[in-house]
Amino acid sequence: MSDHSTHSHGNMNQLMTGFVLAAILTVIPFGIILGEPDISRMLKIGIIMGFGALQIIVHLVYFLHVNRSSEGGWTIAATLFAVIILVIVLAGSLWVMHNMNENMMPMPDMDKMMSLQSQQG
Image (cartoon, rainbow, N blue to C red):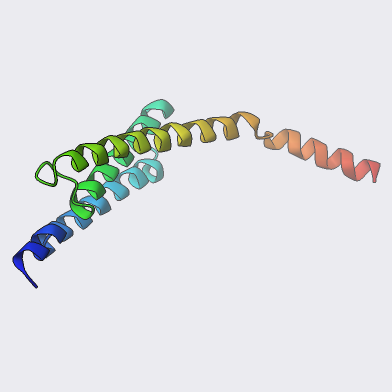
C-alpha cells in the first residue's frame, strides 16, 4: 500500500479515535434517558440532539475524512451538504416525535374505547 492511499483513508489510530468518540457520543444520551436525571424534558431533547449533531461531525471527520486539507471546493460543498442534511434530520426527527406525541391516543381513552367496543359487540 502506498503512503498516499494510507493517508487518504486514515490510519488505525484515527479510525479507533473516531470509533471511541462515536461510542461515547452514543452512550451518554442513553445514560441520560436511562438514568432519568432531574432536568427538564426540553433540556434532555436539546442534549440528545446536540450529541447527535456531534456524532454526525465525528463520522464526517474520522470516517468520511471531510477536512480542510482535502480537495478545496469539494470539501466546502461536502460540508454544506452535511450541514443541510444535519438540519433536515434533526428538525425532521423533532417534528415527527412532536406530531406522534400530539396525535397518539392516551391510554385511559384507549381503555374506554375498548370497553365500549366490547359492550357493543
